[in-house]
Image (tube, rainbow, N blue to C red):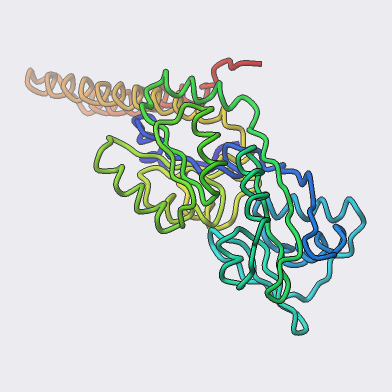
Length: 333
């Protein structure tokens, strides 16, 4: 299912020649997986997952959901009653009964006053393998790292290849993740440029800069971090099923089932919609000219005028209704 807020955005997406994308949860699957839990201070892996899950309990981000699923899989009891604050582009801070837990990236750990020591290199190795390290700290002490894998969405290569064929000239990857993880995916998919470790404001500023260089700029994202960039783009597209509410509100088009192949259908529908609009224009002009010609020669009776007006409306209605029969083009199995 696809939700489009208005015809303007449908037309614009068909003219889009530059597409900016978020990484986590957008071109990577929302089904992220925890593949390792590393203790740094004697905590058991279950305790680390329990702390992280308590902090991330109300966060819709794919990484948070992966942590919650991993905690449930090993039977961790997730405590309730934690007061959580989401820090855009960094992670989560949660507190309860005098305990403060930070779950996020290395920038958040600096705010927490944590010394990473040699674990910074461990995290870097994970990033170079295309995986995300999530640091967990309690009361200013690093207690563990959680290793999260982000598999690419199915058919992502095919979709971007088809979009290039269909007229999108540039792809830009914008992510709050660190450089090694972002650069690996950008190179693998052949993106023109990428930006790593960018804040939500920096994403929006980058999109503003692209708007001066391209006919139409679209942004595809799913999280709170993407909401400002989605609002700044000429066409904002949100991934719906796992997306944050802020992203869905800011977006002009929502892919409810997170199927990237729906982008190809929207491009196809946009092109056919513009064709129908042009045809309707000529239907309107021709019927008006026919009526004016009859009036000039004195043959436009009230009955004929009514018939021309009715034919005008019915012709446009029938031509426009053809769009209801537009179906997605066959795609790769």
